[in-house]
Length: 272
Image (cartoon, rainbow, N blue to C red; front, side):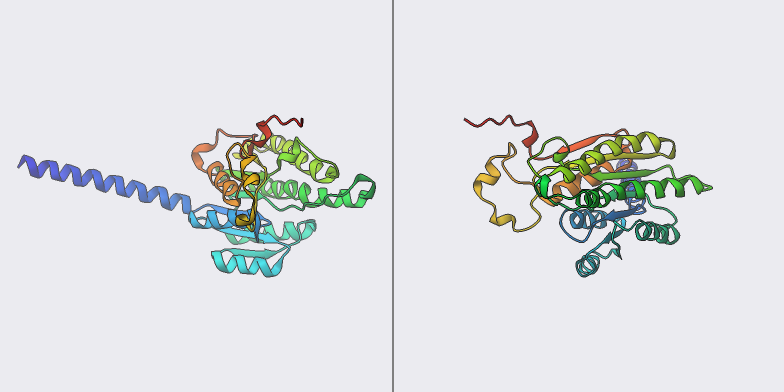
Protein backbone atom coordinates (compact mmCIF):
# COMPACT_ATOMS: atom_id res chain seq x y z
CA UNK A 1 0.00 0.00 0.00
CA UNK A 2 2.89 2.30 0.79
CA UNK A 3 4.44 1.49 -2.59
CA UNK A 4 1.17 2.36 -4.35
CA UNK A 5 1.01 5.67 -2.47
CA UNK A 6 4.54 6.62 -3.58
CA UNK A 7 3.79 5.66 -7.16
CA UNK A 8 0.72 7.90 -7.21
CA UNK A 9 2.69 10.80 -5.73
CA UNK A 10 5.40 10.38 -8.36
CA UNK A 11 2.80 10.20 -11.12
CA UNK A 12 1.09 13.37 -9.84
CA UNK A 13 4.44 15.18 -9.68
CA UNK A 14 5.35 14.19 -13.23
CA UNK A 15 1.92 15.30 -14.47
CA UNK A 16 2.32 18.72 -12.85
CA UNK A 17 5.83 19.04 -14.23
CA UNK A 18 4.73 18.10 -17.75
CA UNK A 19 1.70 20.38 -17.73
CA UNK A 20 3.84 23.24 -16.43
CA UNK A 21 6.28 22.76 -19.25
CA UNK A 22 3.46 22.79 -21.78
CA UNK A 23 2.17 26.08 -20.44
CA UNK A 24 5.59 27.66 -20.84
CA UNK A 25 5.94 26.46 -24.43
CA UNK A 26 2.46 27.66 -25.42
CA UNK A 27 3.11 31.02 -23.79
CA UNK A 28 6.31 31.56 -25.72
CA UNK A 29 4.63 30.64 -29.02
CA UNK A 30 2.31 33.61 -28.71
CA UNK A 31 5.04 36.18 -29.39
CA UNK A 32 4.55 38.27 -32.51
CA UNK A 33 7.87 39.27 -34.10
CA UNK A 34 8.61 41.81 -36.81
CA UNK A 35 12.09 41.96 -38.37
CA UNK A 36 13.40 44.48 -40.90
CA UNK A 37 15.83 43.23 -43.52
CA UNK A 38 15.05 39.57 -42.95
CA UNK A 39 15.57 38.11 -46.41
CA UNK A 40 19.23 37.14 -46.10
CA UNK A 41 22.36 37.31 -43.94
CA UNK A 42 21.92 38.12 -40.26
CA UNK A 43 18.27 38.99 -40.78
CA UNK A 44 17.47 35.60 -42.28
CA UNK A 45 19.18 33.84 -39.37
CA UNK A 46 17.02 35.86 -36.96
CA UNK A 47 13.86 34.99 -38.89
CA UNK A 48 14.72 31.28 -38.87
CA UNK A 49 15.64 31.19 -35.18
CA UNK A 50 12.51 32.93 -33.95
CA UNK A 51 10.32 30.80 -36.18
CA UNK A 52 12.06 27.63 -34.96
CA UNK A 53 11.38 28.77 -31.39
CA UNK A 54 7.67 28.74 -32.19
CA UNK A 55 7.05 32.46 -32.58
CA UNK A 56 4.88 34.12 -35.21
CA UNK A 57 7.23 35.99 -37.52
CA UNK A 58 6.89 38.63 -40.22
CA UNK A 59 9.71 40.43 -41.94
CA UNK A 60 10.23 43.05 -44.59
CA UNK A 61 12.97 43.46 -47.16
CA UNK A 62 13.68 45.35 -50.36
CA UNK A 63 14.74 42.17 -52.17
CA UNK A 64 11.44 40.67 -53.29
CA UNK A 65 12.82 37.46 -54.81
CA UNK A 66 14.99 36.50 -51.83
CA UNK A 67 12.29 37.64 -49.42
CA UNK A 68 9.72 35.31 -50.93
CA UNK A 69 12.21 32.43 -50.88
CA UNK A 70 13.01 33.00 -47.19
CA UNK A 71 9.31 33.24 -46.31
CA UNK A 72 8.60 29.98 -48.13
CA UNK A 73 11.53 28.21 -46.44
CA UNK A 74 10.62 29.38 -42.94
CA UNK A 75 6.84 29.58 -42.98
CA UNK A 76 6.83 33.30 -42.20
CA UNK A 77 5.14 36.39 -43.64
CA UNK A 78 7.08 38.59 -46.05
CA UNK A 79 6.41 42.23 -46.89
CA UNK A 80 8.15 43.82 -49.85
CA UNK A 81 9.16 47.17 -48.37
CA UNK A 82 11.88 49.71 -49.00
CA UNK A 83 12.50 50.95 -45.44
CA UNK A 84 13.84 54.19 -46.88
CA UNK A 85 10.17 54.86 -47.70
CA UNK A 86 8.59 56.03 -44.42
CA UNK A 87 5.02 55.62 -45.64
CA UNK A 88 5.63 52.08 -46.88
CA UNK A 89 7.23 51.00 -43.60
CA UNK A 90 4.43 52.53 -41.53
CA UNK A 91 1.80 50.92 -43.76
CA UNK A 92 3.48 47.53 -43.26
CA UNK A 93 3.32 47.90 -39.48
CA UNK A 94 -0.27 49.09 -39.57
CA UNK A 95 -1.16 45.95 -41.52
CA UNK A 96 0.49 43.82 -38.83
CA UNK A 97 -1.31 45.67 -36.04
CA UNK A 98 -4.60 45.03 -37.82
CA UNK A 99 -3.78 41.37 -38.47
CA UNK A 100 -2.09 40.47 -35.18
CA UNK A 101 -3.55 42.96 -32.76
CA UNK A 102 -0.08 44.01 -31.61
CA UNK A 103 3.64 43.40 -32.12
CA UNK A 104 5.58 42.01 -29.17
CA UNK A 105 9.11 42.12 -30.58
CA UNK A 106 10.69 44.39 -33.18
CA UNK A 107 14.19 43.73 -34.47
CA UNK A 108 15.59 46.60 -36.52
CA UNK A 109 18.18 44.78 -38.58
CA UNK A 110 18.04 46.27 -42.09
CA UNK A 111 20.99 48.35 -43.21
CA UNK A 112 23.44 49.06 -46.00
CA UNK A 113 27.23 49.13 -46.04
CA UNK A 114 28.61 51.85 -48.26
CA UNK A 115 32.25 52.93 -47.97
CA UNK A 116 34.04 55.55 -50.03
CA UNK A 117 36.67 58.29 -49.52
CA UNK A 118 35.13 61.34 -47.91
CA UNK A 119 36.05 63.45 -50.94
CA UNK A 120 34.03 61.06 -53.10
CA UNK A 121 31.07 60.80 -50.71
CA UNK A 122 28.31 63.28 -51.44
CA UNK A 123 26.01 64.74 -48.82
CA UNK A 124 23.22 62.82 -50.52
CA UNK A 125 25.19 59.58 -50.06
CA UNK A 126 25.61 60.36 -46.37
CA UNK A 127 21.91 61.17 -45.97
CA UNK A 128 20.86 57.95 -47.70
CA UNK A 129 22.93 55.77 -45.37
CA UNK A 130 21.34 57.39 -42.33
CA UNK A 131 17.86 57.14 -43.84
CA UNK A 132 18.29 53.38 -44.29
CA UNK A 133 20.40 52.43 -41.27
CA UNK A 134 19.13 54.79 -38.57
CA UNK A 135 15.80 56.45 -39.33
CA UNK A 136 13.74 53.22 -39.69
CA UNK A 137 14.56 52.21 -36.09
CA UNK A 138 12.93 55.44 -34.94
CA UNK A 139 9.95 54.94 -37.27
CA UNK A 140 9.19 51.39 -36.09
CA UNK A 141 9.67 52.31 -32.42
CA UNK A 142 7.41 55.33 -32.75
CA UNK A 143 4.71 53.29 -34.47
CA UNK A 144 4.80 50.69 -31.70
CA UNK A 145 4.58 53.40 -29.03
CA UNK A 146 1.61 55.05 -30.73
CA UNK A 147 -0.16 51.72 -31.05
CA UNK A 148 0.50 50.75 -27.42
CA UNK A 149 -0.87 54.08 -26.22
CA UNK A 150 -4.12 53.43 -28.07
CA UNK A 151 -4.73 50.04 -26.47
CA UNK A 152 -7.51 49.73 -23.91
CA UNK A 153 -5.86 46.66 -22.36
CA UNK A 154 -2.08 47.27 -22.12
CA UNK A 155 0.41 44.71 -23.34
CA UNK A 156 2.94 44.40 -20.53
CA UNK A 157 5.57 42.73 -22.72
CA UNK A 158 7.64 44.46 -25.37
CA UNK A 159 11.10 44.19 -26.88
CA UNK A 160 12.95 46.34 -29.40
CA UNK A 161 16.36 45.13 -30.53
CA UNK A 162 18.45 47.33 -32.81
CA UNK A 163 21.39 45.96 -34.77
CA UNK A 164 24.34 48.32 -34.48
CA UNK A 165 27.98 47.51 -35.31
CA UNK A 166 31.38 47.64 -33.65
CA UNK A 167 32.00 50.51 -36.04
CA UNK A 168 30.03 52.68 -33.67
CA UNK A 169 33.29 52.93 -31.70
CA UNK A 170 36.06 52.02 -34.15
CA UNK A 171 36.65 53.02 -37.76
CA UNK A 172 38.80 52.95 -40.85
CA UNK A 173 38.99 55.59 -43.59
CA UNK A 174 35.91 56.10 -45.72
CA UNK A 175 33.20 54.88 -43.37
CA UNK A 176 31.76 58.17 -42.14
CA UNK A 177 28.14 57.48 -43.09
CA UNK A 178 28.12 53.90 -41.81
CA UNK A 179 29.89 54.76 -38.54
CA UNK A 180 27.57 57.70 -37.93
CA UNK A 181 24.48 55.59 -38.55
CA UNK A 182 25.61 52.82 -36.20
CA UNK A 183 26.67 55.36 -33.58
CA UNK A 184 23.19 56.81 -33.92
CA UNK A 185 21.68 53.37 -33.31
CA UNK A 186 23.73 53.09 -30.12
CA UNK A 187 22.47 56.46 -28.83
CA UNK A 188 18.91 55.99 -30.06
CA UNK A 189 18.73 52.70 -28.17
CA UNK A 190 19.27 54.10 -24.69
CA UNK A 191 17.05 57.10 -25.45
CA UNK A 192 14.21 54.79 -26.51
CA UNK A 193 14.72 52.64 -23.42
CA UNK A 194 13.87 55.65 -21.27
CA UNK A 195 10.99 56.87 -23.44
CA UNK A 196 9.28 53.47 -23.71
CA UNK A 197 9.76 52.28 -20.13
CA UNK A 198 6.19 53.12 -19.08
CA UNK A 199 4.92 51.03 -21.99
CA UNK A 200 6.82 47.99 -20.65
CA UNK A 201 9.12 47.87 -23.69
CA UNK A 202 12.81 47.21 -23.20
CA UNK A 203 15.21 48.47 -25.86
CA UNK A 204 18.68 47.08 -26.45
CA UNK A 205 21.17 47.00 -29.29
CA UNK A 206 23.67 44.46 -30.54
CA UNK A 207 27.00 45.43 -32.09
CA UNK A 208 28.27 42.62 -34.34
CA UNK A 209 31.88 42.43 -35.34
CA UNK A 210 33.00 40.36 -38.32
CA UNK A 211 30.00 38.19 -39.18
CA UNK A 212 30.50 36.13 -42.31
CA UNK A 213 27.14 35.68 -44.01
CA UNK A 214 28.26 33.47 -46.90
CA UNK A 215 31.15 31.22 -48.04
CA UNK A 216 32.25 30.61 -44.46
CA UNK A 217 34.38 27.66 -45.57
CA UNK A 218 36.39 29.98 -47.83
CA UNK A 219 37.84 31.93 -44.88
CA UNK A 220 41.55 31.60 -44.21
CA UNK A 221 43.04 30.19 -40.99
CA UNK A 222 44.46 33.66 -40.31
CA UNK A 223 40.96 35.12 -40.44
CA UNK A 224 39.88 32.89 -37.58
CA UNK A 225 43.16 33.04 -35.66
CA UNK A 226 43.11 36.83 -35.21
CA UNK A 227 39.95 36.55 -33.11
CA UNK A 228 40.42 35.77 -29.40
CA UNK A 229 37.53 33.31 -29.82
CA UNK A 230 39.54 31.71 -32.66
CA UNK A 231 36.81 31.92 -35.25
CA UNK A 232 34.96 34.44 -37.40
CA UNK A 233 31.36 35.08 -36.39
CA UNK A 234 28.26 33.57 -37.96
CA UNK A 235 24.77 35.08 -38.35
CA UNK A 236 23.45 32.61 -35.79
CA UNK A 237 25.68 34.23 -33.14
CA UNK A 238 23.59 37.39 -33.46
CA UNK A 239 20.27 35.57 -33.76
CA UNK A 240 20.87 33.72 -30.50
CA UNK A 241 21.40 36.99 -28.65
CA UNK A 242 18.19 38.39 -30.12
CA UNK A 243 16.32 35.36 -28.82
CA UNK A 244 17.97 35.69 -25.40
CA UNK A 245 17.07 39.36 -25.05
CA UNK A 246 13.47 38.53 -26.01
CA UNK A 247 12.95 36.09 -23.16
CA UNK A 248 10.44 37.38 -20.64
CA UNK A 249 12.75 36.88 -17.68
CA UNK A 250 15.44 39.09 -19.25
CA UNK A 251 13.54 42.34 -18.81
CA UNK A 252 16.26 43.68 -16.47
CA UNK A 253 18.58 44.09 -19.48
CA UNK A 254 17.54 47.48 -20.79
CA UNK A 255 19.21 50.32 -22.69
CA UNK A 256 22.34 48.23 -23.26
CA UNK A 257 24.56 47.67 -26.25
CA UNK A 258 25.98 44.14 -26.41
CA UNK A 259 29.09 43.58 -28.49
CA UNK A 260 29.44 40.21 -30.22
CA UNK A 261 32.77 40.17 -32.02
CA UNK A 262 34.79 37.25 -30.70
CA UNK A 263 36.73 39.62 -28.45
CA UNK A 264 38.24 41.76 -31.21
CA UNK A 265 37.36 45.16 -29.72
CA UNK A 266 39.15 44.13 -26.51
CA UNK A 267 42.34 43.16 -28.35
CA UNK A 268 45.19 45.67 -28.15
CA UNK A 269 46.83 45.87 -31.58
CA UNK A 270 50.08 47.63 -32.46
CA UNK A 271 52.24 47.28 -35.56
CA UNK A 272 55.97 46.89 -35.13
